[in-house]
Image 1 (tube, rainbow, N blue to C red):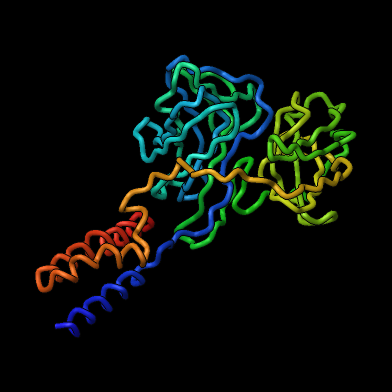
Image 2 (image 1 turned 45 degrees about the vertical axis):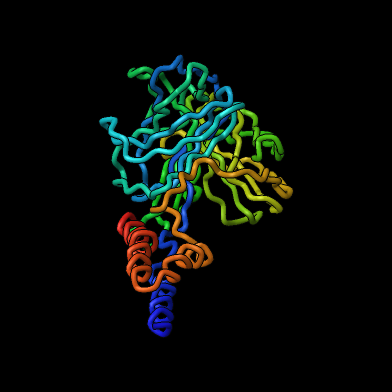
Length: 343
């Protein structure tokens, strides 16, 4: 009898490793409106959402620039008609970037229209808004009608079908948007660029002097970790905005930036290149409340499994049957569900 029990335990231990714990690809920034807000708009308890078009076919998390009075807010990913596909909740206090991480990966259609909605806004929930020129493939809505401009947001994901994180995006790229190889002197380049790391914002603030060409559409901000090559677009703003906050930097690195004015597909020559050293970024140790832990999304550890199975094993034959049932319900079935979610 002891040999049979040991054999069953061995099979169950093997089952713990039969399915991979994480079969998702590495996530990257996809779509975004990331600029200095023109205003912080209160919801008044009404609905607030931003439309966007993902470049990737999987979304993992969404960041929004909101504020509240230390209360729980729920963010939902919805289709164009307003049906919720996925959601997550966080306690929101002072105005800042808050990241809502979905417990299950969201499958979406690249290029289709979706909504980022605050579905349980409190009366004092606010969302940062940029009036013009922040995001080309969507717009801000308040209480069912267009508000104007865009709410500040960032989406993250990957392409599941190709097994990589390729794909282009607007103001946030999987395969980065590189500077145009042809520029025109008909558009005067921006002047006097400056940059500094802001510890309270955990980002690099870049500023510049305006182009003297009056009929431009706006400015594009390019960044690299090498001084003379490897630049890619990290942001785009309208022509009245002369600053940009880059919150995608990592600590203990040196970054190089330049800015170009643009009109349509035509860009000016690059501004002077500036150098910004980012120190180590301190992250407060806190539980990520955006992850909703369930039996389906968080399989038990090996030690948890041994603790769980000790009592059934001690009960003899009936315990073995009970043990097999628990194994299927707590270990194998959640892993099957997790894999199907990513297919």
